[in-house]
Length: 116
Image 1 (cartoon, helix red, strand yellow):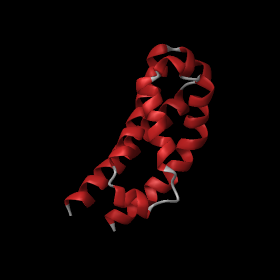
Image 2: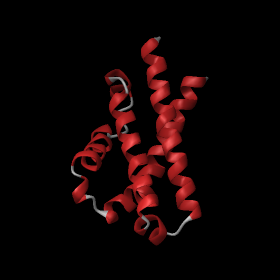
Image 3: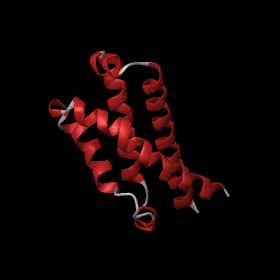
Image 4: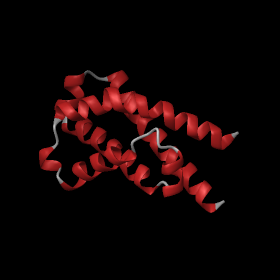
């Protein structure tokens, strides 16, 4: 039961971070988001949160939801935190606009199933 609650909380963290990203994408242009340090690093932080929360999901949860490739999500977090000097704005943009929306579909489905 405790692990189930922990996974649910991590999914909430991922959904909250996605919501922040979506609000930024809906409000500002690509140039504003990537060229304004406060916005840029805010987006980086949200991707870090997604990666950290994914890493903290139980192994059982990740294994039972193998349609998501969790390793690249965690690896992205590690690069953003530990190798920040090499962050590519182009790769970040693809993550924000392509990978995150795809991940959101899965996370919402998992979260809804936990609440039913």
